[in-house]
Image 1 (cartoon, rainbow, N blue to C red):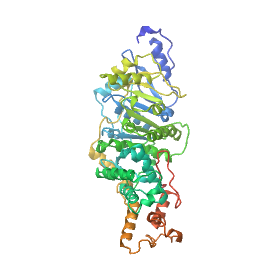
Image 2: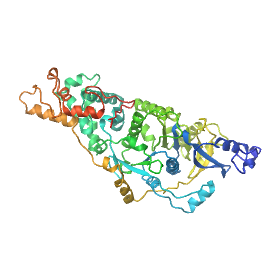
Image 3: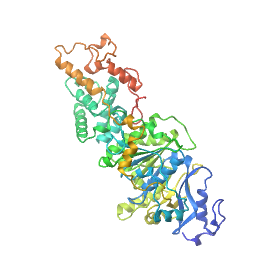
Length: 535
């Protein structure tokens, strides 16, 4: 990798002073000389020098071809996300960021110029100007600073919930049967106590006949699920499930000045619940996939979704869960959504998913242990052929430097380029908590989602039926409708089970309207088992 390795050649158009550069550098420069809109990542590193004439970029239309940002702790991954998010917002593309450590909120405030920023900007020929970007801040279940993000158990679905509850494959399949039963019977599962009530009913003497009608679900397995739910609820997880349910279309908003809104999900308050927040991120993505229309190839993405701490999503995941992730990532591109997985090494991402990530920003890796060395060699094999000695380069990169390869405007991989990255123009650190709280309270979304609502659902209906049965001298007699809005029930339903009687109530009809389904029809679920209420 020295200037003597190749004779000078003519520079590509737009690269000044490049005739003295070696042939490999000119080929790299040509690979990134895009004519359309693009994001600027930084300047090429070659033979220990930063070459500001050779700018490394990502074509804007290729951002929905997904990507990977990887690297060891402390190598600058978060700042890379911030840099890309800023430029996407500036070009009118909404962005979603998961803020696991609490240091991404600064994207809403102008950065502070200092010697390090001036030096970096000069090295990569960046016209650095401090700027803040339009942001909305969210928090799971309202735990922490942000607008509460909740999901109903019904829409979350059995596959994702099994991941949260850490159920095995058999238990996951059994939970799916319970959802199937609740869907058919019109028992809406809004929060954890609703699901617990349905499972409790199915394992009771009264519900055992119903349980026998669900193929493959044993009393013992239902009991395990019930205990898992009870333990999960005892850990303080209830706030994450309920209503009002978050409408993921909020993530696709554009500010009044035309810049894309940056949606920041604040996660420091739930850092100790990785299974929960990683699975919740997947619910957001699956819900977007379920609702967004097909758009095909677009001039710029409709949304770019950064999935931080991605390894947590794949750890101990069932085959059904991995298959659903793979299919979602494969198909969501045609809906204009780009997904960037952020983790330490490409090994953290399954091969079927990694193969779909066309844009790569690989920060430094460490090789202190045999496992580190194995991960390094595995990472090198995932890159196209390169004039660099990537094993050497990847261990020698400094903070804010990375090896990059992206998809060109024609969809072909660009040459591998070691890059000194630009400095973000927003604040590289968290904003003051008081300022963050003010931004949340002033948001037009705050009034929509701030207060939790607990309407009548499965728990209330089953509890009411149990109370009626206990108080009645003739429990088999047909009961009156539970709501003034309910219509009369057909005579042939009078001898049906307790749960079947619920289907005729006015509350159930209200449920059916909110689901956008007909009374008695099973809820349509996506590849992830998620379901949406139409607003």
